[in-house]
Length: 474
Image (tube, rainbow, N blue to C red; front, side, top):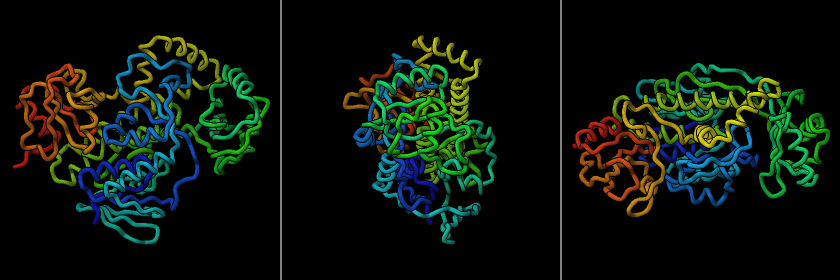
């Protein structure tokens, strides 16, 4: 019997498996595809995701495969510089092929002891008071204490669970692919600038050596149920630009809609949902993969605590309570960005106003912090503004803060040198450092890097340790 079965070994599923293995949870990941996908799509890892990778000691190996670029111009593709004053040690975007992200996170999970089976699809499940029986396509049946659906926008687990998935269906389809261009960069840039003055859903930009990302409306192009072809791209380019720019040698081609949906519940009994299985939205702003990885880090330590037997009664319920509003906010900002991409006169007028407003650094920073998820503040009750927020990677007497979070444990960072975690030392580390770059006496950091307590009183700390990490050991 497994502790947790995860359906889907994309970034969300692989990250969740790794987080659970940090706490010695027995994990099986089932991936329906027998081989990794061949589409070499470039995705962007945002600031918060980069911070999480640093917190788990993964950032260096990921940076080797990516390309850093300024974190500007990503809200509705409105041209704007990277804002000043971003509160992160990783204030950049990392463009990286999605198959590489998938591979690195899967390797990380396996290194920590997760079992991954490819070519295994979940076709059914039944849950009871003790666990979940999972059925596979070959009629094999497996048993686990919990099942987590990380199986994407068309999630089988979500559908079988029967949880409501309200929202809006797709209204506008978009073609997106990466390919080579047959005209000079100068000719291309001039034409793209001209066209984007009136059509914000069209863009061609370089993403690598001789490779360009092509995004354009898909209205009237081929059957929606069929994958697009290079001829579809050429046809639509000629309709919009009067030329197909000599596009050739595609690396991958896709079509996406602007459907926007969010599950009513992230958990029903012993079955949970994460990533695209719980929320779908247009890819504008590049938030989808990042949102899923952040779901996994929020859920992992809480589900592990439940399985290891020390979780406070309400802890697992905070997964939905915290992540559902975050996803709702992402859906709202992607809806807004899609409206700003419309060619309608009213939408264009609003876009011009936003373009003007984003010349103010505070406005630009607010929108970038929202998209890159460093503005999140979980509702942990009354307290200083820092309470519920994630803490940036700060300097310590010896090294950096995130280097102390690789094992996914809680951490009390104590500048007073008077506090203790006696009774919780099997779950929480103590670091007494009067030189730490903090403006408060001491903090309790959860394993996901969010601040759960601020103060200097031992009794108050003990109460919060109990709230988040259960009763002290005997």
